[in-house]
Length: 526
Image: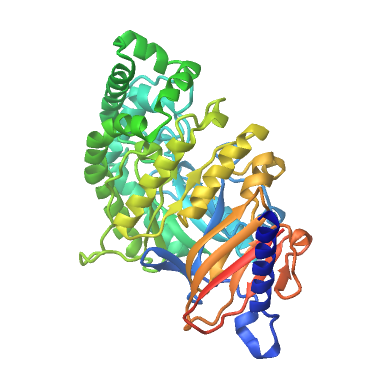
């Protein structure tokens, strides 16, 4: 039986090689390497100007340091490396404090430096999504808003054992968010949220006709403010109820607070939430207050900013994130924004983040597969409900973790592939490309541009085997292009057109359009 299976696999590979005959003179443009000039949205898919479906495979490029002018230090060679590593897109972080250091005064020098990096990306066929980033609202407590826009009313700032704990502990951070959602006046008398919308209008006007900038990620991980104080009691009560249901133990408030206030004890307690059946009722305890925030405050802000952008730019895609709490699987209530005339804006993408509860802890390698699958399932469901393409703007955050994180990374990648999500890994640091999870999970073959509808794809690391299926579109004449990071390992290469990337072992497999409405399959063995 084993010999028979090997022979079937071999015949299938050879058969596919015969189907994908070498490009001849008669194939013309359908067999030439054709990178997109621009990317947009059609329904629930990203598409390029050639009519192909696009998988955005990206990484976050970020510098949160004011002292370094919020600019990642990598020059043109860095963007050339991103191309070699197979990234066709980046989530490029921009910081409000750097852009508008004084009310209504925009920093042209910072913008010029952003322009340069966009040019470097364009020179390497990399598209850019601009993300207006914040952590703990602003510069005063982390990064994001300038101090003049951080209306914290002098409240106390409290940190925790993990940086993100301050969202739940800091009255100052929560109050700054409250005043943003309420559009309280900045020192110049203009509402602080109006300043935000005006800034986005200014940015959109600058990049409206730049085809490399394909999207505006309006706000990173929007946080509710003081209403989030409802979250911790709701979570603890739901967790206590689960413990009682499973063990009969009645947990005191003091015991719960002790567990959740200590990172190591929290990780141990999370083992109880290792199944969908246990995790869902606990995380769903946050739905009601999260729904109120997203459907009222967040949606109104998105509508205001989107209309400001559409005044000057009608072509670039708007990327809408769910709330901070939905990162961990709470159902999101955001909806599509509308144009000025009330019709739905067609150029919108859903830009969720997906993180397990152990992210940003020393126990990141203990990420639970069933929890992660649950989070991604919720994301998929929301994308389907919205009828938008899904772009996972952040996931991972594995940083300098060792070999033990590789299975966690591979599993996350398998879910990204299974759900056909676009993605941007969080994040790049110098030397990331040398780490095990990068080499053994992120670096892999994938179909960047598909002539028709991509039905499925997957790279099996264990078997070094790539497979994709797609429904060819007879009206599209541009080739399907599959990125391969290790061409030297590819078997049966003689019948494929291969375009190597300079100074690397990476390149593109180019599959000519067959001008038929037919189902096609590609199998590559390495």
